Structure formats: C-alpha cells, structure tokens
Length: 598
Image (cartoon, rainbow, N blue to C red; front, side):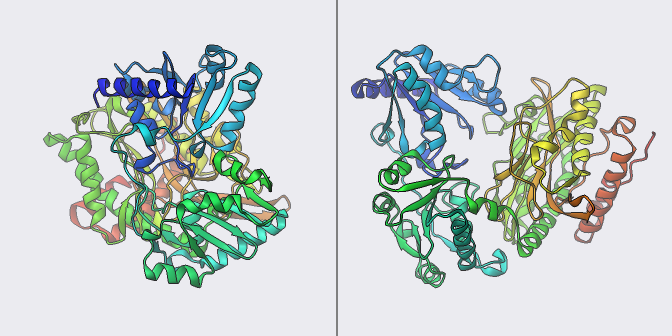
C-alpha cells in the first residue's frame, strides 16, 4: 500500500479528532470479542497504519502517529511503516515507554484520550484509566470512528454456521452447558457473558468461516443457570442449525440485541472475564448488576481435550505428516533445479494437503521464510516480497492446517545446502532445547513458566535467546492459539493438565542473516503416580522428520540423540504405509538414526 494513502488517512483521522475535541485516539488490533485474528470489518488498525501484523496498537495525536508492537513484528513493522510518518515503538524494549506513559508525557491536564469501547477490554481500560486520572487526562469510550471515516468498509461476515457432529466433538452442546452451569454455581454466580468466538463455537458445537484461519461464527452468548441465548445474525442460520440449537436448549436472538439484553439482564450476578470482555459490554451491565470478574471457566474446559478430540488430533497429524514428508522430498531437488520461491513452497504444501479430503484450510498464514527473512519472526511472503530459494542456508517453514478432527501447527528449519559452523551450532542448540522440553517429566500443579527454561537453557549458555513464547495451546478444529495455558518466560499461572495440547517451539533469530525454529504440537498425559503425587509428561503428536544434517552430535548430547532417534522411528512407522518409492526412501533416510559421538 502506498505510504501516501496512509498519510491521507491519518490526516483525515486528525480532522475527525479535532471536531470531537480529542487530544489522542488509541486504535487497538482487536474486535468486540478480543480475537487474535479479526474479520475484515474490524481491521481498523491495519487500515489506518498499513501494518497487517496480528498484534499492535496505534496512537494518533495532533502531530504524532505511533505504532506499538512486540518483538515478533519489529522488523516487519519497520518495513510497513517506512515513509508513512509513523514512528515504531518497540513494545517490550527497555527504553520504550508504555502507551499510558507516553500519553501522560505528551498530553496536558484536561486533554481527552478516546478509544472505541467495543474493541477495548476491561483490563486494557483499567490499565489506562489510573495514570490518565492522576495526570488529569480524561478517557472517553467513543463510538467507532471508522463507521464514518472508512469508505468501503467491509460488512459483518455472513457465512453460514455449521454443526460439528458429536462423533467429531466427543460431547454434546447440552452436556457442555451443564458443565458450565455447574462451574458457575460453584463460583456462586447466576450467569456468564461469553464473548470469545472460540468459546461460543466450543459451547455450541458450531463452526463457521467468519474469521480467516479460525473456523468460528461471530456471536455472543449469555448462559444462565436455566437458559442459554446465542446472539447471532439470523441470516447465518439454516433451518437445520436452528432446529439443532433448539434441541440443545439454546435460543437465538439478533447479534446487535446483545446490548439491550445486557441492560435488561434479569439475574443478580453475571461473570465476565475482564481480559476478554469489552468495556462497553461491561458498562452496559455493571450499572445495576453485580459483575463477577474471573477467568472464563469455558477456556479451562475447552483446553482439556476428550478422547474423541485426541483421536481427531492424531488423525489430523497423520494427514499433515504425510503432506509434509511429500513436501520435504520435493523441496531440495526443486531448489537445486532453480526458480523456486517462498510462495511456491506454500502453494505446493497446500496442494499436497488438499489431496486429503479431511483438509479444510490453513490454521494460520504459512511462514515460508528463506535466509534473512526467517529472522522476521512472523514474516509472510507476498507477491512483492517472495525470495528466491538457493541451495544454501536455511528455509524456515511454519505452517498449520484445519482438518476434520483437529488443528495442526508445525515448524521445521530446513537446510537447503551448505551451512556455516555457526548456523549448525545454533540449529543444534535450538533442537536440544526443543528435546529437553519434550523429555520433561513434571508434577501436578506445574505451569508452563516453570518449564520454559528447559527450552532456553542451551541458548542461554551461548549468550543467545528468543523473545517469543515457547508454547501455546492448540484448539480442536478451532483457533491455533488457545489458552489459558502457555509456556513462556513471563508468569502464566495456568496449570498444565492431561488432555491439553501445547506447542514446543524454541527458536533463534539473527537479524539480516537467518532464523531457526523447531516446533511440534504435544499432548500432555499422565506419567506416573506415587509417593510424591501425580507426574505428567508430553507426547509429540506431530509426525514429521526433523532435519539431522545440520546437527553437531557432540553438542546435541547422547540423551537428546536417543530421544530424536526414538521420535524418528515413530515417525517412520506412522508415515511409511502412506508413501511409496522415492518418497518412502526419502523418509527412510530422513529418519535414519543419528550416531552419538559422545
């Protein structure tokens, strides 16, 4: 997009702010449902800045335009913002002020900071309100300014809702609602506002295509001890879906009816999750009702997969593994012949996946990043930026699919030719961290933060690190990023429990040179129980060879080598029946034992 277009949009936005008397406007990346990926109609931050990363916040004042984003997007944001007049604020860097700090330093007493309250969470609003109040700055929850300013703005998505059958979901919506009501009773509350789209999808066993990569429908729910109402555009519901919802004890109202329903909520108490509930919704009910603020019990239930869901994951990982093995067999010879670019890898993988009738689409945009591009953590090739692959250095391939039965997420770093000793050492340390975490045995009550160092320790010993999280939950035919559990350095107190899926994806990124990441999706399961209580372990669900040609065996260590050999034996056993001839021979060589030199 031309930087002149962005400059004109910012100019128009400042005129709007001047008319309204706003000293600053905060534009977040979210939607009314606190989604990571948002429908096109809510991509306001992208429209006003030109930066299309999934995380970032814009602040516009009379003379400044700034974008805060985290380390995953610093390099990408620098490119996107060049020439637009925006200043990149590297969120998380030691010398970067927070948004409230910067505004307090640059505005005066009596100035008004505005934000659209429907796309700002209660937690965000609270974090901003206190420092503003101390400085005498007012915070106004304004109506959506883009209704007026965004010409040609996309409408709300109207894709049809689809029923996920019980043989795929493993549990009826009626049963899930009963479990939720039991959890609400335990908390002593009479109802819950469900705002997260994946939670609505899980509770109702409905899926859709309203958000790219996330098979969800745009809707709210209010669940009480004796009722459940789905707030959704009626045009999205077929007669079959309406009859299904009625059979599960779910009634239907219009999507926009949620605001009046919150004002007229007849119970005395209602639960909201402050980090996921928008402030406009909270304010609509808290004037005359007792609002109970707590983490969503739906998220905790959804994160622990039932046996049917786990089997669905296994089938999906098998399908993904076959496609990946075929891709890896094709890749290096194709690169050596010449003419292969990053997008060609993405297209080839989609072609191979599509041969399986279980494949429904991508779970996120494929990251096929060659050479220096791989140092941009969330780089995505485009027709304009589409590097030619050469028979040297690394290709980082981070990809995932939505299948009937499960969601996949995998990363492999693939040597395309000769590597330097530094590249081999870095690759080996990342792999050793991946294996150290994969081999972990841990007691009940452990959270991901307590395990994070296992993946980083070998990089730390070399004075290296990565700034993204090490692992996240994966939804079942849902969002590829799922909580509440995570594995990362900052405190994430949610316990790791049997039945949870979690990724294991340490990495290393050297700007302008290369990037490395190795990722499997894992299943947490019981390990043993004895005098010291219950212990858990992680089983890799992902079935795909990990390149061994870049390994320095003495740096990897004998225990890690034995784990890798065992993993590859399993991969070969599972994938070999689905491959033939040259592809089977490739798999055999890719899964060949690594001999320890230790």
